[in-house]
Length: 271
Image 1 (tube, rainbow, N blue to C red):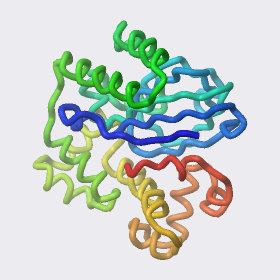
Image 2: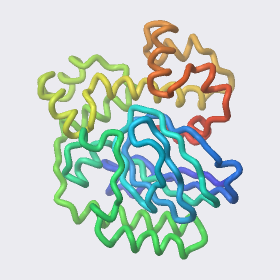
Image 3: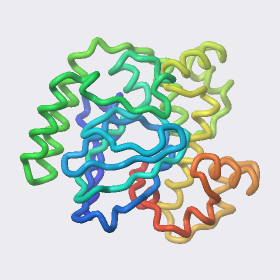
């Protein structure tokens, strides 16, 4: 299995967090794995075999060769159908709003075929990626595509909401919403309204997802896991609060989740 995380060109870093490239020779390792909510949208490209996704809302379906995914607040199961070659372009939520100019809350727990929104450029990108063998050339092609597609769009800029988004990500969701509004220079009501449209969730709910995401960051950064320390550092009131929110976003208790070989932990990229 090959798995690497890269950062995008400086000119698009306001919109793109990172780029993940993964290849698996043979589907045995990749029979089924769970993706949990992580607070980022994305453009996903499968340049080898397709994958099958199962979730509570859409049921079971074969994913397109490339698609745009909005934010999610529920776990998703992915099954490989053979050799896997995938590129995930992790977008900040507001980056997706800038790119598509569609209210972000309409894309929550939803995917859209990229052909419908990114014209022929994405088709050429997939063809080019499929032809070159090494991942660094693939990455170069993706970077060129991102620079082009973002430079061509007349982007909608709202620096106050962008600041609020980054503050919640930076703090791991540990930020009072009144303090966040003051820091961002907007009223609480304006923050709530604009956050739903440009991010997809309310700031309070997005903070919950980032707090959940912070659990994975802390686990991956430590040799030995002390759950009480993690519960405290992530801002949960107590163990019951932690188990309740973790179960909501992962579909199972922390004990059950971490007993399995979940790729959500292995593939965590520091978001």
